[in-house]
Image (cartoon, rainbow, N blue to C red; front, top):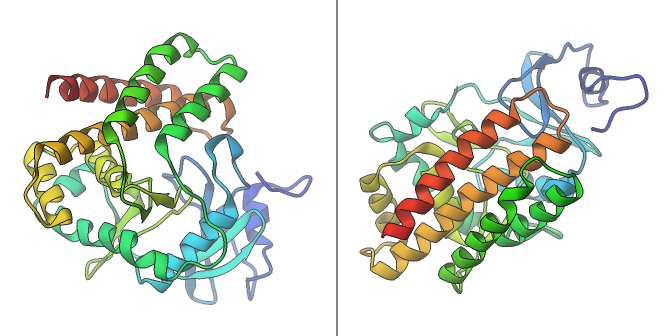
Length: 296
């Protein structure tokens, strides 16, 4: 966390030179990577994200900034108003932060999928400067090294998890490349009524579209019928066995990455969040999803 000696994240947020008058940052709940605040200044509301690079999660703020600006230009994400090392200010969006139940609700997936497709296809036309690639299987292998170095409580699980990951990567095979959000948790969608926004670009990068589609399904508990509709609509063709198998492998990988992300956060994060419980929840989801995948 980037803070001057003796300052808290809230104090850092309050003293950014963007403000036109005195401000009182209010904590914004829900974040499990950064410390976020809502700030009202001169009658307008903003979100302030305070956070440094997080190498153990391959979060690099230059990449987040490039993705955020490109997503703004594409009309997908709110406007970036100010940036300095360790701090980002964006417009506050009045709306409902979605839950898993909201994502699964009738009609919502039909609103979200076009937004994800626009992220994949339109953001690259607006990107400027260097950006990252997000290859989930590299991330998983890197997490394993971080867990070994940190003497994680989960070390005994790593050989089996890495063997599964190796098999999944082989099944995914060659990929198409798009620009992925790569963190499609329900809380990263905001329903403003007339439209839905996609926020938080910490993990953005070039990737296979199957990763975002698998993450959208696994993070939100989509039904099999919803998954079939999603795949057929996104790819504009009937699902064949090969696509279904490759998608299923990437869906498993997205859950494994989320599980190992939480394992690493148990060691390295200073945020007030129950990562151990989050690890257990995702490990259970991963186990059930792999079991179903292997039976397919």
